[in-house]
View 1 (tube, one colour):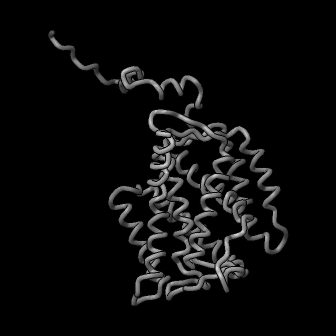
View 2 (tube, one colour):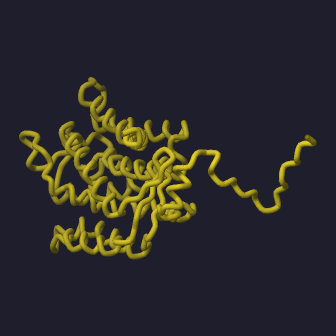
View 3 (tube, one colour):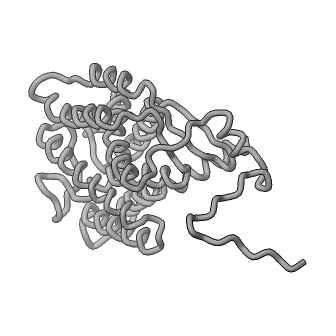
Length: 285
């Protein structure tokens, strides 16, 4: 139970960007403002991004990843709104093609979560097939567009993803213990919580589906699969950055690693000195 509480607390910290987005979304709905709610929410999101960077909650590179997610999400929003998949009750004066610019920050919140989780839980992925997984992620993202003109390939893409990631496992740390889980399972779990968040966002009228125009209804459970697939794009983008940082791959979560993480501090092996460094002088006593 203690480990579960620790894990929940770390997860809550990882979701700070998303929590602040929802806070801003709620505020623009209940607080009288001199500007359109969509414009106010955009200013709020920009301020949140700036503050989190200034207080070093997000690193400069993580802000860059968030910006990339914003662009990827905005491109998808422009296409989907044009196709009538969903719409925005408020667009404000700062919008493109009926899509308010704050919409990209919803995808940026996903990128922020992945970056924060990678750092705070010390994530590493073993058995990760970089090119194959990136290829499937590209097809997944492309399918969100082509499904309107050809046919929806989500099911075969999901099956292909399971094949590509069958040996991939995510290793993470909670407290002093190291755990592991299948990478594909993490896609589903994150997708589920994104589906829950989507219900909250549509309830607050961040956007709405055609079935929600007259009265709010729960988002169809089929969207859970869409979110799980979209997470693949998120992981691939962040993994590319972490590979450059040398923080993609790590030791497998075997018995040796478990013993190292479960051991008391005195039992942990001493750190090696950098090459060329000199050992500390011994006391005369």
